Length: 235
Ligand SMILES: Nc1ncnc2c1ncn2[C@@H]1O[C@H](COP(=O)(O)OP(=O)(O)O)[C@@H](O)[C@H]1O
Ligand SMILES: [Mg+2]
Image (tube, rainbow, N blue to C red; front, side):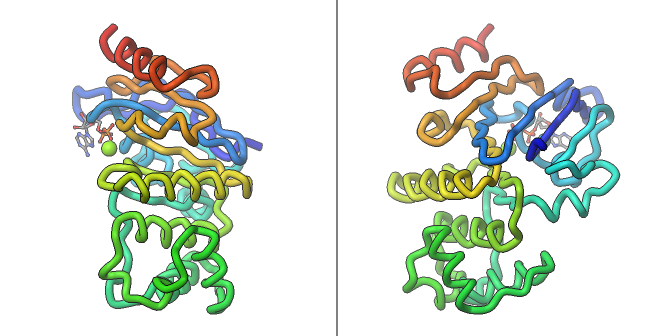
């Protein structure tokens, strides 16, 4: 069963075709980079998968659950990291994780919380600290730990590398690999080509709401990827 399947999905905002006839499929553990410049329709696509926006045409299933007829059921299978992962600033990492896991219907104890935060790459001296002081990279790690606690089938990342320094971006790549190796499919939307090659198995290029290319990441070196990207956006 696919972790995610979009079939001919379209949505418009007035006269603007924000996403048009988009089909994407991700297998469990697959890491897919949805590339495209600002305004290409990446966030709109994630919002449709999450059930925040309803497509006019097409179908979306998350781990076999129809996201249009059962948006809550679909969302229960998704870990979502928006551009800014929102945590309760006065709660510690452990408390945030326990709280959000509980909202998702999973009761976890402190030992499990520590273990999941560790797996998500958060250093142990931060587990008890208030998350108000956390960097973007640290908040992302708590977000990934929440996805692990939910036993999500799919992780959605929106512009995950924007505002990360090199070391935090490297950590993020490792966390994505760890999620993937646990069978979690990862869809990352980004305009940042740098590092995509590092973690993605497959990549798609979105231009004005249309998927204009899709390929195995292994077939491209970084220079070829940049050339392909520029070419697909220009032609
Ligand atoms: N709620 C909305 N109402 C009207 N237009 C929107 C709305 N959301 C997004 N758009 C437009 O749809 C297009 C795609 O936006 P978006 O999905 O945010 O792009 P990306 O995430 O790739 O930068 C843009 O032209 C944007 O202005
Ligand atoms: Mg966006």
